[in-house]
Image 1 (spheres, helix red, strand yellow):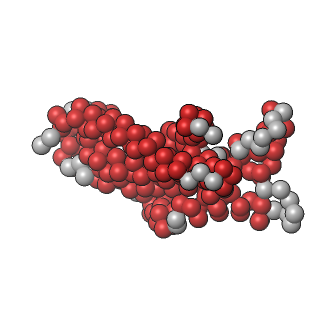
Image 2 (cartoon, one colour; image 1 turned 90 degrees about the vertical axis):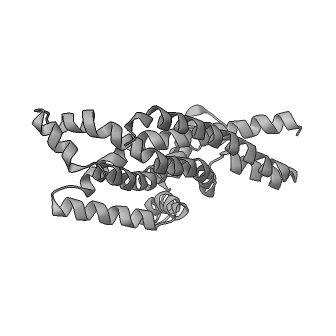
Image 3 (cartoon, helix red, strand yellow; image 1 turned 45 degrees about the vertical axis):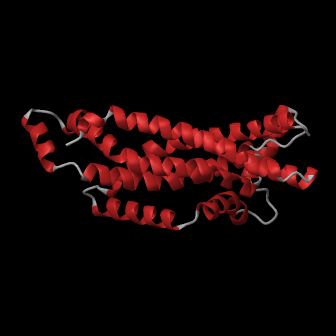
Length: 237
């Protein structure tokens, strides 16, 4: 395999990496916001349950969470029964008439694990940002005759976004690198493809070459988040 072929093959895996990254953000951010509201709820039961859930998920390594979500359905089913995610892989492979196994089911398992994990981390960031807003801002909104929803959208939300961008940036950059954990259940993302080259073609350098893809992606994400933080700089005290 020449350099161009290897680059194209790794780009195919990197596309899967990017898809996992964007879908995780798409689902984890709103779920994290919902969890943050639950953890600040006036209901003691809702508050306790949500905080215990967040504590458990944050305490479990992401790799272990992926394995739990992928393997537990099969372990809890009938002995010898097919794992639901493996069954999805085989079904979509047969549906597409492909000779190569399609990892749609396995990808769903990884995506679920990532969304659950990162929604819990995001929820704590959101909660910290919301609770950092002085109570006087809420009272000022009430004096102006605004509803709680209007106060949150028009007064609180932009200030919260400004305050949470730095910690969110760290988590988002960590997410870029954590996508490599998808290969633990054989998802053919960029690291898995590089490892396959090392095993089949005795080429170790593509594994190190993947670092360039991650560095470029992290650099782009850093620039975008820095731009967003600069645009909200008018909220400085």
